[in-house]
Amino acid sequence: MNPYVLTILLSSLGLGTVLTFASSHWLLAWMGLEINTLAIIPIMAQQHHPRAIEATTKYFLTQATAAAMILFASTTNAWLMGEWEIHQLSHPLATTTVMLALALKLGLAPVHFWLPEVLQGLELTTGLILSTWQKLAPFALMIQVAPTINSSLLVAIGLLSTLVGGWGGLNQTQLRKIMAYSSIAHLGWMVLILQFAPSLTLLSLSLYIIMTSSAFLTLKTNNALTINTLATSWTKSPTLAALAALVLLSLGGLPPLSGFMPKWLILQELTKQGLPLSATLAAMTALLSLYFYLRLCYALTLTIYPNTLTATAPWRLNFTMITLPLSVITILALGLLPLTPAVTAMLAL
Image (cartoon, helix red, strand yellow):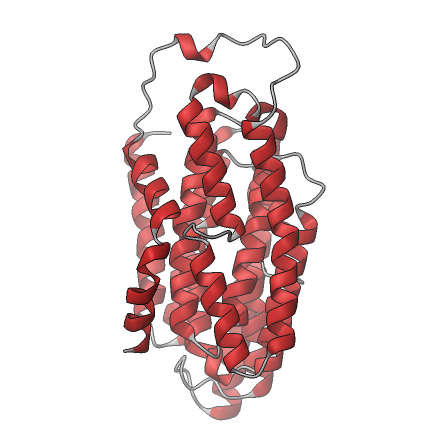
C-alpha cells in the first residue's frame, strides 16, 4: 500500500477513536465509531486475497449493524427521555440495545461469531490492530453507560464470554482463531467486573493489550500461522521460543507472570461484592483457556517439526526485522506482577 495512503488511514483510525473518547453526545460518539470502521476497511482488504476480502465484508456488515443499533438506541432514548447525552442513557430499551450493540462491536458472546472468522482472514499485523486498538472506542462507551445497565446482564455476558472463549479455542489449530477466542475470554473478564470496579476493567484492558501485542509480534517474527509451524520456532530463535511460551502462560493467567494480576484482583473484587459463585465459574472457565495456551507452549518448546521443510532455511538469512517493540512489550507482559501493591494503591485513590 502507498505509504501516504497508509498514513492517512492510520491517522483516521486514531482520529475516530479519539473522537469517541472525547464525546459526550451520542451522535459524535457514533461518528467516531464510523470513522474508525471506515479507516480500517482498506487496511484489512489490502492483501487482495479472497479470504481477506471475505473477512473485510463480514467485519463491515457486523460493525455497520452495531452502529445502526447504537443510533437506534440513542434516538429512542432522545425521543422517550429527551436526552442525547451518553451519561443520561436511562430508558431500559435503550440501555439494553446499546449494551448488545457494543457487545457486537467488541465480539463478546453471544454475538461473537464474526470475530474468529474475520481474524482468520487477516494478516498478523492487521489482526493485532483489530484485537487491540479497535477495542478501545467501544470500551470507552461501555464504561460510560455501565452504571445504567442491569448488572445481571453484564455478569451473564461476562461469564458466557469467558466460557465461549475457553471452549471455542480447545479444538483449533489456526493460531489466529486461537487468539480470537483468547480475546473473547479476556473481554469477558473485563465485562464481568465493569460495574463493580471500572478501574479494574481498565487495568485488565491495558494488560490484555500488552500481552496480546507481545503474542502477535512473536507470531509475526516467527511467521507462524498454525500450531505445526510453531514447532519450527526453536530453530529460528531459541530465546524467543522460550519467551513466547512464557507470554502464552501469562495470557493464561499463571503466577508469577503479569497476566495473573488482573485475574487475581477481579476474583477478589467479585468475592467482596458477594458473588462467590460467579468468581468460581470465572476461575473454572480460565482453566479451559489455560489448556489451549499449554497446548501452544508444548508445540512451541517441546516438539520437533516432523516433516522436511521445503522453504529456505530462515536461520541462515540476515534478520532485518525490528525487534525493539517486541522486546519491550514482552518484558511488560512477563514482569509486572511485583507492581501489584502499587497498582492496588493507585486504584484505591
